[in-house]
Length: 158
Image (cartoon, rainbow, N blue to C red; front, top):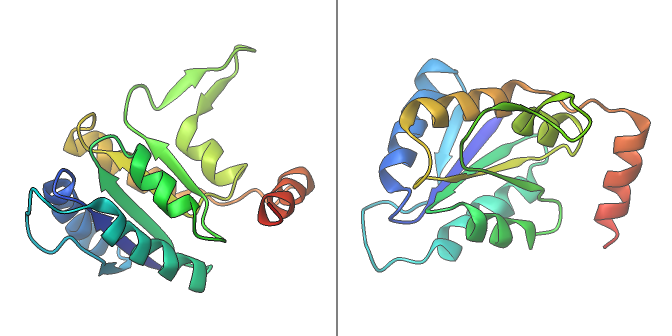
């Protein structure tokens, strides 16, 4: 599995850290889709779109996109058919849902929604939280339960 990375200037430093982490500690092949230098005037859609298109073309691969909040980056990625981007900007990894069940946002995005792109909000994550989020995202499999598969087929027809 190859992991594509993209960020704007706000996520640039965190992206550099995560590129090394994913390649050297988690052992994945990576590809940097930009930004390739810090430029305060750059625009995240220019880089995120490239990573999202690569995921759409290679469905066994994933992407990590990083910006200030991660919201705009997810919006760009989700415009590419076949991409399912989930946003994470920290807080408790597992929390109780309304029914009182302990639920990990990242694990649910992977196991229930087969998210193939993780969008990180660099303004809200320190390095340790970002690494833990990426590790969880890359290591959590899709459940392949019929109800989740059925819902994904419906998403793909929208």
